[in-house]
Length: 110
Length: 116
Image 1: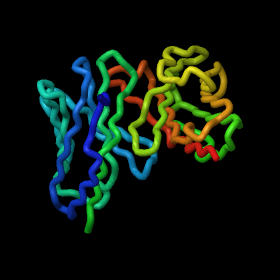
Image 2 (image 1 turned 45 degrees about the vertical axis):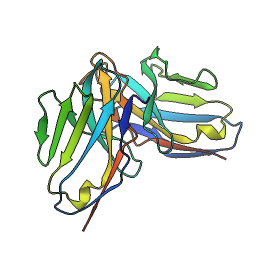
Image 3 (image 1 turned 180 degrees about the vertical axis):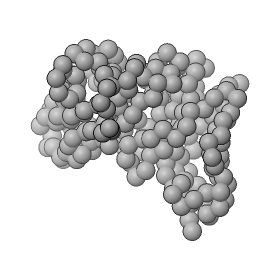
Image 4 (image 1 turned 120 degrees about the vertical axis):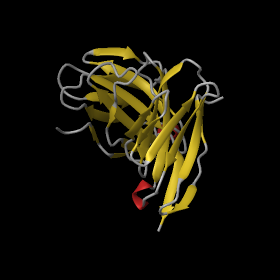
């Protein structure tokens, strides 16, 4: 079983729509969770960290469910510029080895 | 403040040749990490280095791959006798501290290695 699994998509949504997707992780010792964004196989860029209580950053909302070992990302009012691959990343608290999912591709159309 | 720099951005090698990938961390960062991304897969950790020290190379293939981060100059990932399966994007990241937990790792643009 992979450490981090994601639905590859693609999720094709119109501008203004809401899109949400999950990521599951296998290591129950994972303590740090992140969403990264990757455009056209360029470098991953940190989108947001995910906290136990859930957190929001503008149009982006991340949730963590430790019992079921998954995290989610919700994008509201989608923009064309949100088209990208979203990478789920988990790691134990004291570990520097980021474990990446293969990514979920989102395409926002006009 | 320049970000993480990698060169070359694209590298083509024939089977059996050597590939050298370079990474200059962000200014003030002394921790460097190398990751590999195979087609349709997530990034996989390869090695973690500090200046003149390999801290963790648990993700490195046992043969043909080596990494260094000298006192002066960039970090180098070296692949000897490349094979087609080495074709991938190789990303370098750096962090000011150990990169553990919430210490953010900043990624470079990557080197795309193609082995013919």
